[in-house]
Image (cartoon, rainbow, N blue to C red):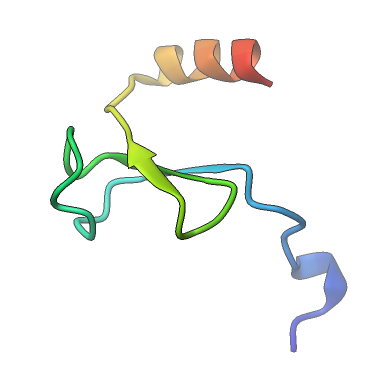
Length: 58
């Protein structure tokens, strides 16, 4: 078992481009929201777009 300081608290959002959801629009880009099983289509972003998103969403 992992020490408690290494365990994540709660998954909020995780961006992914692994080719495991081929039926989603914008394949392979997708976002896990709240849990590993809740997946929505994503999009490719530049680092500047991602920073803007992070500043506005969080």
